[in-house]
Image (tube, rainbow, N blue to C red):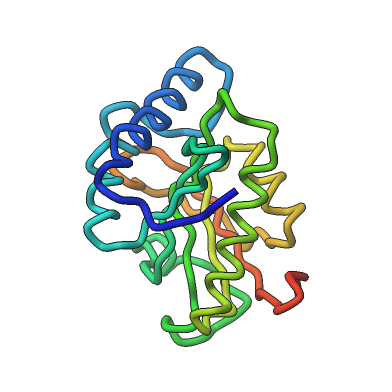
Length: 180
């Protein structure tokens, strides 16, 4: 597995993963809470490529997953009951973690989170924040297993999607990869 910054030539594949996730959700195979045509869309990835903050996980030459990693805390985070009240520059945020549903159950989500944690530490950001929709039970279970604590749930319009119950999670990264 290799992790790298996404490039413009990766847009088609990232969009394909987004669309497949939307297909699976519409078919009842996934419960994430995203909305086709609203979020995520090709422009989500294009904007992140322009900011240079989207990464892909490539395995055997195939992009299997992507995620946006930066310091940008959505407005709904202002309502967070955070344990760690630290300067923004010490906080790294993982957004829009996607794994191609056809490649699920290969450990890509866990591997991406580990990359995120290592990347944050390399950039002197030991405080990690993630959000997910309340209905995304699979993501919530994964994040708990990886040491994240659910801090609270915020009702909001999130990324243009109405009626979201946004679960806010955080943890302190440790150099050994263990949660605090």
